[in-house]
Image (tube, rainbow over all chains, first blue to last red; front, side, top):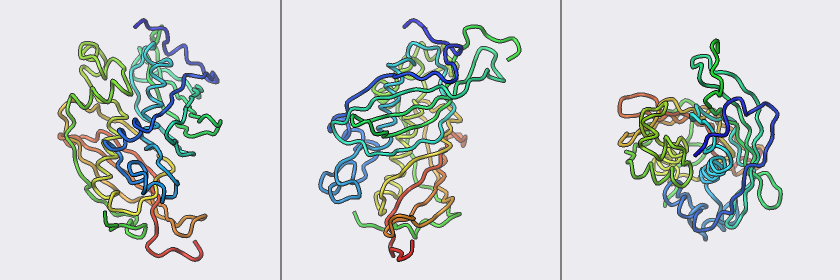
Amino acid sequence: MTIKYYWEDFRPGDTAEIGSKTVTREEMLAFSREFDPQPFHVDEAAAAQSLYGGLIASGWHTCAIAMRIMCDGYLLESASMGSPGLDNVRWYKPVRPGDTLRMTRTVVESRPSSSRPEMGLVKVLWEVYNQHGEKAMSMEGMQMFRRRDPGATA
Amino acid sequence: MTIKYYWEDFRPGDTAEIGSKTVTREEMLAFSREFDPQPFHVDEAAAAQSLYGGLIASGWHTCAIAMRIMCDGYLLESASMGSPGLDNVRWYKPVRPGDTLRMTRTVVESRPSSSRPEMGLVKVLWEVYNQHGEKAMSMEGMQMFRRRDPGATA
């Protein structure tokens, strides 16, 4: 794939819609059975009796879906070098079977790497909304990208 | 499953080994192809040329594996009510095919819910180490549990 986006292309304040995805019951159950088999994620009857009143997605599944939306939305066309971590992961609203999630990206900060002149870091806020316009999740992460123009004094 | 652990059973300062898991190349590729198909996660040749010098697990896969270790280690025997979020997710060392991850849990804080007398919250630090004793990942999360003895004045 051709690289379209380098570190310089992520400017603080920029906001973009990056994609959406409808989550099926089968996908939810498959993920939860493998990684998060708590009753309210894998057992319809137990979920109905829980705080949530029905089956909900694992928060990790919502994160993984968000990652895929990021990949398809811009990351696979970027000079991505991975990520050192995340902050402020918040699950505000349960994600339920059939929900359609859409996602926005806002660039919060940008700085060159202090150790690697070929790299820059970007702090990004991602927000995930459901089909009712409710915010289902948000998180902030650092993304590392190659620079189009490596700095001599980064 | 019988409930063994309620909110009262998670006491600040408590540390425990909660389990381990060996990650295969096939599991890594399957997860990354679905959720995080960046070249260094899905393409051996591209990964060899990358910053990482070889195929590495998606950080989200490491998180999902950590979730499963939590489930098997204590959560499925607990009165878990889910989680509102996470902080300080850090990926320190790449996870590579065949790595064996082991995980510890430390209770950082505990408080009753201010809105639900039947519920308490616990802040937990999870640390994931590889077979060389290197810390691969850590994160802090809030977990919600039912109380064994619901508070009248929570």
